[in-house]
Length: 358
Image 1: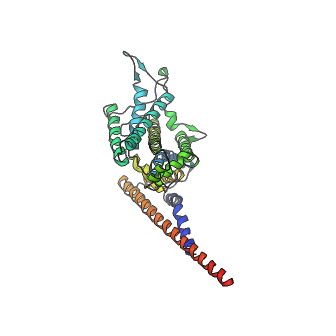
Image 2: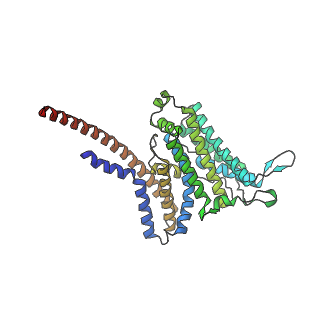
């Protein structure tokens, strides 16, 4: 049947992110010596962790039909909060200062990012502001706050002091467990959590329902406001974790950390097959998209390609992914119509056959 031929094309389109990743790995393996070595793959996967963490939160947001442009700036302000807590402490009465240990710093920063994301969700749902405008405004607010935290300066040397009990921050970004960097384990945990939430819980069904048809979801009793606040809060949490990881790796908190990270997160999500209109996509697909984005960028760096050309190539890849996604949706509609038509033809032929034999 003709529809079966198109189904083959559909399967290829659904696997496009894996195919793209294999092409990227194959190309740079041929062009760059030692691209596939274990040590280099671990380093690149550590880079993937940054984009992957953001992509998980971004996927949940986009599945509801929204967008979060503030994640890069939220990572920046959260990195600065960690720097301030480790170097300046928390002012108390008089000249007294309270210095938190590393775990307490991580908790405070995680809560900060989650709260910023929740504010995005509240403004979008309660005040009716479009997600694009709301998160764009939050991006400027968060970036400005990051610059104001230390008058545009960095917080250097975040190693802490033993007498203050705040040493060990570097372990988060540079430590290893079983030979694998901690950011990779963190990314794996968040990806598994995202998969569980979207596939195994009522919340996941609500997320897809809202993105697929919000008016119908509202009529079905889906708690739209709570779900949207959750996905933006979760996106803020992922951004906070990125800010912590970057500050830990550099041992420096910089107010411009996370600049343009939101573009990589959106690009990875779209490459992974999540529809910008919402209602269709997978967390695991976004993870593979993050691998494509980062391996492509790292491969171009290793080849010595200009940073300007890297931006051009990355932009073309993202636009191509959107075009392919639109083509996939049109092909899916065509296949659905063809299969309905074929079923009608089969039913008609069966009726004619029964009449003729009767």
